[in-house]
Length: 278
Figure 1 (cartoon, rainbow, N blue to C red):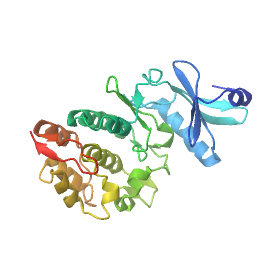
Figure 2: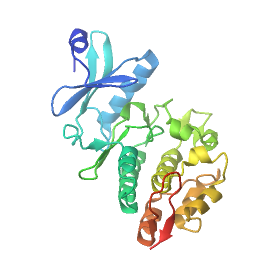
Figure 3: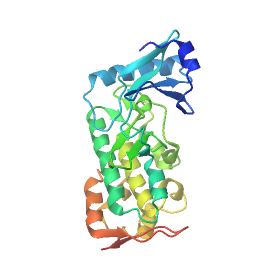
């Protein structure tokens, strides 16, 4: 879609981000304009768009429907508006957990993470890896119906197109520098990084223990013991995150098992929450 630069400059952005401005064109479509788009990044972003047109539709992944062009050429994407945008139902799940810290249930957290896992599974089937998934705002949660949408297509690693973007939440963890997660020889992240992200996110939302920050002072065994799930299948999945010789496990069954057997202790300021048997 071609829009004159003058028209964009005259239009006040609905959302001002660090790297892009978002303009709602209608109730169905928005324009995402990149504030800085260097030639190499521009080439990769255009290639990603071509891949998006060719790949099968992924439930829960918001993909561009067109490129945004001005007189200066490509400068962003045209994207569908996510359901719930104009009713203010969309929120980052971390914010939702904080707002509902006293009554959030393990079942609500589990449902969110499982839906994220289902998006990731489809992404992996299409050659997509998501190292920036845990950045604030990249995954939208509809607090009215529980639906989940991943929106950060422009910075994904797609097929043979690399990305230099990784969430600061997970970049703190020294394990990210190992070949299990990042191949220095070809500059590509592995699918293990997505399974790591969702495992530590589940653990964080449930127990309040931030593994990437805590791992420098505790080992993973100690953190699991604090939360009370060292001897569970999920605990084994967490330990494998730090085994450089094993691929990470899909945590879906481990989460379902936890939900059926455990509940969370009440929220207390400054304390980790524990998993206790029902």
